[in-house]
Image 1: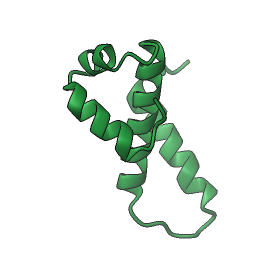
Image 2: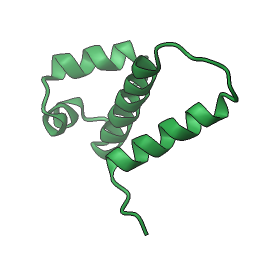
Image 3: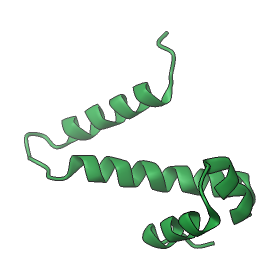
Length: 78
């Protein structure tokens, strides 16, 4: 059984997405993957920290201001 790590999970997700296009093309795949990954990361860390933005920012290794900007960017409801 293949060990599931973030890289493998991302590769499998991107492959499934590309296969689902059924020959159609897409633009900005990098931006799509990065935005969805970042939003998922923020949502899960905020849930883990029970909405405590200071704790979440610390866990993520960023300032609370940066976290708040990313929350706004992804339209995450606190």
